[in-house]
Length: 147
Image (cartoon, rainbow, N blue to C red):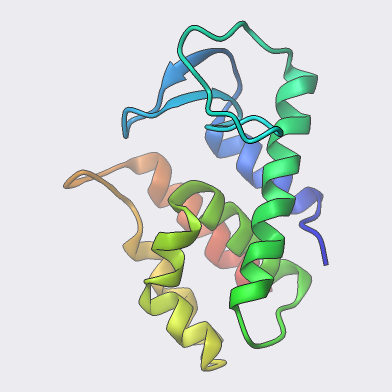
């Protein structure tokens, strides 16, 4: 199963579009809708040329579907489309390694979905600060996961 438009819309909404490369809050060169890599696997560099919104959406959907596949390879229980979309947005933001090391991941693999959903709200920090945008994003991801 691939990520669907619901995942893409959620990612695009919270990542926002930027044509020029920039450094994300974690200091990583990023472009488009929060992409840190191109489809060929090369890293985004601050000196890279601008991209169009169409190119950015294509790049984001490529990476989102890659994350969806990776999520399904590590989650050992069936997920519905909404759960996969929510987790795709989440993993797009926090990374697969962080997800795999999380309590949420363990609870999902134990099929404790309601308890796992509570853990979205724990991922709202950048450094030691709560970011209001992450609070909103996690709320929407949780709502989608629970549908």
